[in-house]
Image (tube, rainbow, N blue to C red; front, top):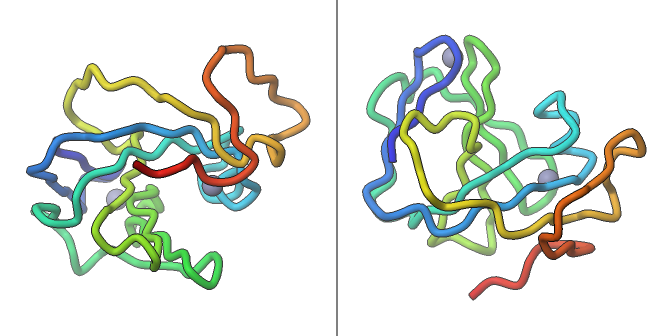
Length: 133
Ligand SMILES: [Zn+2]
Ligand SMILES: [Zn+2]
């Protein structure tokens, strides 16, 4: 999978397959994405790299164990780094530049969802993170 930010300054690639996609309804994702929820896809950290503009990537620690990266020029969301999951990288699915047949399989932090948004599909909803395989 390859991806990039809105302005194109930053591009990335992951050589391992996209494993899962989750919709996150936590209030921090809502702020960061400016939307009802975020969608992040998980890849192995091994094989992930920035192919362009890694010097433009900024990061913000949104919680003790969580660091979010984004393009310093256009603000596009990129990584969601979890300190206690060092082997994986979660990438903002909106940055994907290639098609995938993987579909989201969970709503996480569903109890924090925006009051103005209704979840209308049948995917499992978790109060916190989904159980990791
Ligand atoms: Zn950008
Ligand atoms: Zn979230």
